[in-house]
Length: 155
Image (cartoon, rainbow, N blue to C red):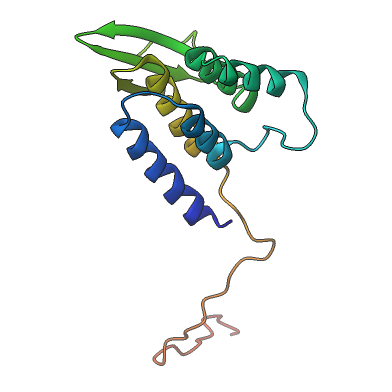
């Protein structure tokens, strides 16, 4: 899958999370399928099995936090607050820094699990390394007015 299509999926997924009213098992599975690279599909490890148990028991908030722990170990929950009917979630790579120095991801939603999942999807989008080619691309079109000039003085 190309990087552009991956980013488009994450943007669409972010819009769907903002528009959702609550979490379902199908929606959370779709988020995992679209964003998670470490979540094993064939060989289960203990953390992935725990996430599946949390999804089966409909523990959405715990499942979202476990996804962050599994997929984005360098990110930590910086702030989780409820104000005026919305949950505010902030993820950060460096929690010890003051707020004004840290580049954290801040999201909000009326549902706690969706606020955390929205921050997770955004952190996943930012953390995805850009794909690089092994050989740099060469511009194909040459300017017709281009003429090489030797500027060395051999005198």
